[in-house]
Image (cartoon, rainbow, N blue to C red; front, side, top):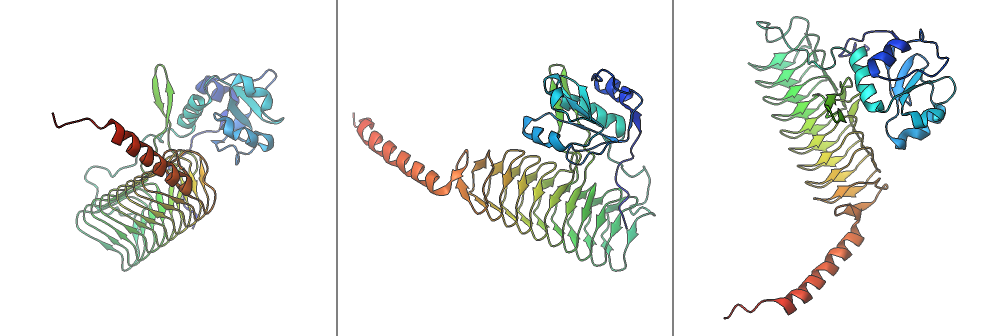
Amino acid sequence: MEHPGFFAKAGPFTVAEIAQATGSELPDGADPSLRLSNVTPLAEAGPNELSFVDNRKYLPLLEGARAGACLIVPGLADRVPKGTLALRTKAPYLGFAKALALFYPEGMRVRAAEPGAPAIDPTAVLEEGAEVEPGAIIGAGARIGRGTRIAAGAVIGYRVCIGRGGYVGPLATVTHALIGDRVIIHSGVRIGQDGFGFAMGREGHLKVPQIGRVIIQDDVEIGANSTIDRGALKDTIIGEGSKIDNLVQIGHNVVLGRHCVIVAQVGISGSTELGDFVVMGGQSGCVGHIKVGAAAQIAGGSHAKDDVPSGARVGGTPARPLKQWAREIATLTRLSSRKGAADEPDLSS
């Protein structure tokens, strides 16, 4: 059964209405009555959809773009292909945020149970053998598979689907998520809250609606008090068999491959992609919009700011090949040791 989604969509809207809402300008000769039905990532947008470009890293995607319109700075408007309207704006990301608010007016709100509603909504579907402990809340349209146990105080949100043989620990919350079989979610985990997205400006920071989901595949385990944000437009994805320790933060649109190991206090920024069997040591991190190749390893306390090749072992801040980092540390240790011996103060007087 196809999932019905978590957010209701408004529209379609004409490009004139979109331009007014986003503070952008239509190109000369454009048909203001052209109607668009959604806001979509540039690589996936079709002729009746709106997209945007705010990061030069994604300019190559413009060559094959099929979007009906694209929010873009005036200086790059000539890069927009024929057939796509260039909606010119000095702040494409701000325009994107306003467009999302136009198409998804409920995108800022989490659908909660009505006051006085039963703990298990009558529209929720629990397969035979699913267990719900006292104090847990199961939202409208949620589905819980056979053999899954929802512990006391846990909250399963509107239309969340959880597979079979899993476990959701005490006081965990799961919203805007589709979860596979045999997934273990420990106490205090937060899944599906909105990602950290703001269009920043001199007059303040406008919140960007987050309308994506979290997809957690089979046999994943998530440690206590870890957080996984839902996607902005696309989905945040945790690949099958991956193991996530306690106190880990995974940002919106992150894609984690299969059988990754993410140790405690790791932070993975939005739109980062990790291949299969990646290992990240404790307190390590990645900046956003980079790729970590399959079977790569990032040492504890290290921070990657650039793509990491498949099979690489890196360490330090910024992360670099492990042998190079080890040589640098050894050299610094030797230099500081020599200088320290010569400059050590006389404390005998």
